[in-house]
Image 1 (cartoon, rainbow, N blue to C red):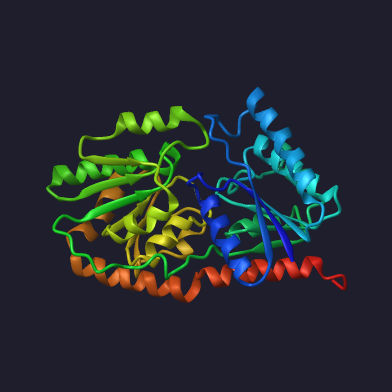
Image 2: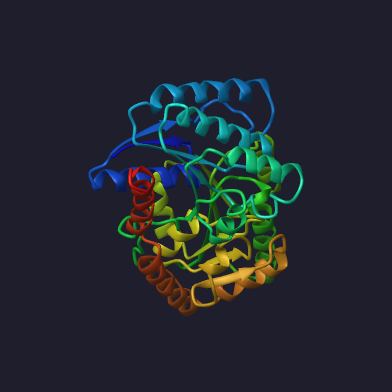
Length: 356
């Protein structure tokens, strides 16, 4: 098949870009011809807002999809899908592909959709914007359940990780490293993590706090809020190329993602493949992947509970090793990149089969 992927790729550092890179490589190894229409902008802007720049960007991207879509067997659009502005944008991108007669898949990333689609205008908008799309994919079964009333073909596609690329390196540290990888935004719980880390320092629990990531979609203000809250001991690395992330994972001892909302974060699976125990929040599909065998779950926006969970791991190298080994085993068994690519490929085949 000829497949056109549409979404934010490199140099974007988010989960969509990482998923796109893995999906493109996986499909190509199976003999498919895959192109990426990269919608990343290097200019600073705030996604999800009505602005002259975003309106211009949307119409430019819609026109690019319309020009490129002809001749492909499938167009696969990747989007966070909320808030309303992003929902309309995703709909227009899909509409441009469908107007060329090409089966179109919308892949909904991120967990903000939980609790967002209720009765009223938001539900009506979701129903309208999903109309005409051939199939919808999401990385959370819970989101599939939310979307099924709005679309007859909602598919669960678990995120997958290349476990050969993300793997333990057998390092031994004298001071354990707590690693965060993601955008610098309060919604990711980064300030909560900083508060918890400071509490641990006050308790005498020695550790390094390393934060890898940069500007979020909502703009520079969110990043500056995080940076302003950073304690002196926090190491803010900034954005790094995705190719360097495995090295940061392999050099850490605990991975922490205390987000306020998520679907199924790819960074958690990458950390687990790297042999790290995970401390995360009970949001989205995370509790279906992380449990007491592979890490710790805490309530969102609760720094003291987060500090307690981190302390249990930081003071016990044996516990870190046992949970990290179980985490890698779980990813290799249930969340491989090959499995994710197979699921996506099956959906492609089902919507392009003339007999279907």
